[in-house]
Image (cartoon, rainbow, N blue to C red; front, side):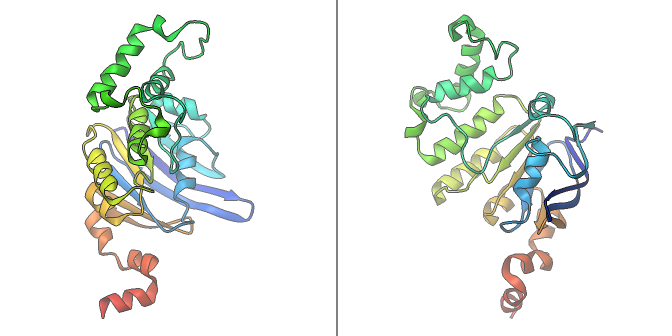
Length: 254
């Protein structure tokens, strides 16, 4: 069985600071898996290692049973990995249509051809139109992204990641900065994604985590401190201590 993601003793140091310490983790096909932890736990650094933005100090990374520890970002993307970021990474001055077009073009062999207009590739335009129709965004196709609500921008970023047809999708705090109503919409949106796409996501909102995740991994100061089914993690006293502090746990139990 090919696991979408397998980490073996993965570590990353920045000088004398060890941001990720010997993390071993396996994510199964189709799984919705959350990474929890307070600020500074090493969650985003872990995502940077998996996606190839930075290289590990030690350890190994496997995508679909292929070792990718030394591969570049685009080589990992070609294997089936896509990622969103904590801060939206969109072309603010371009329209929704053009943003999705660029995401689709990025996976085509002619992506570096700057001498032909996009109209020369009608199949690419057709692909974008199908994506707009599928995600019910036809009414926003000509809207400049900078004028979209922040919730719509977050959703668009996920749609652009999905345009690459990834087999493994990394979402870095998809509800960060959203209002309660936008968070509910995003939670429903992620929950409705194709079950064939494996999702690993970082999230601080516990309601979101336990609405989506089947399994949860908890990090603290770079260490993996808890891992298991969502319901098991919800009742883990170590996790409560990390978020509430030892005194907070005693107060909650009294």
